[in-house]
Image 1 (spheres, chains in turn purple, brown, green):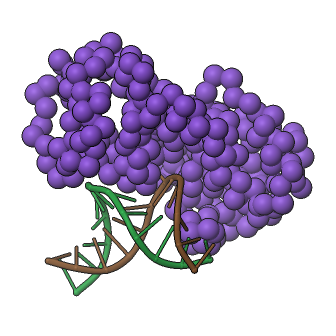
Image 2: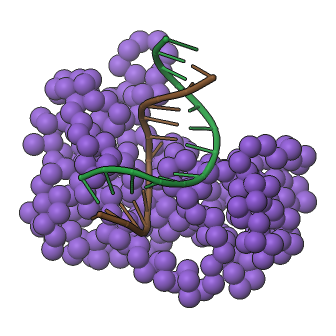
Image 3: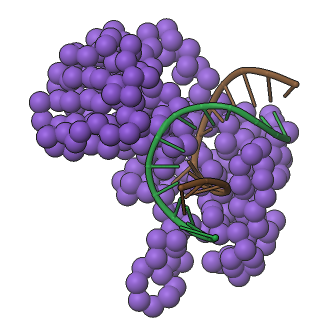
Length: 263
DNA sequence: GCAAAATGTCAAG
DNA sequence: TTGACCTTTTGCA
């Protein structure tokens, strides 16, 4: 479930469990064997996250991980489970274990290599002092639809398909309007909303974008599906106005929106 | 048992 | 714009 909130949560988690610890690093699957050998036996000095990219610092090297669509971490207290299946990375501290499977990227980077990677990323609403103006300026100068720009990691880092659909709904914005046709204040409000949503995602460990009054409309058991306004709800009634939520394929991804609330 | 889908990205055409 | 890639889970036979 990797949008930016997942990655920042992992950075925090790995900090708590492993920073300051000497770790044993291996790649049971073998695909990361060479990289693992470079950091095996070193102390994890710190962790970092930018958008959907996760970093571990070991001496003068970075472990860089991008989960992609399928990547997943698991962790726990020793004893560690026997390696099973396609286990790209396994990390053991004196007290805890960590497993990584299915990432798009798991590699060792030098400082300049990491710097180069970061130049391709726009501001991340979850970082300390994000360059909001860079985001605003970029959107205001583009003919591209706002729904496309939100998915562009060079424009804003950390937003994925769920947050895109949900923030546009919450702000009452059509995904198809060109970036340059927005008022600056509207874009600032959207940024601020993303800060709130992403932070709450880090805290909760999942994406919840609906206001409490828009959830659990049925009496009885709470339903996880209530967590979203439009994402994954094609053909179902909009929670606000009852119009059928629509979806279409844009650049290979499903885009969801309410044609009434997002004219 | 197998196909399809999934919160992502990149390169080729 | 399309396909390839990383892996697991879900849904349907």
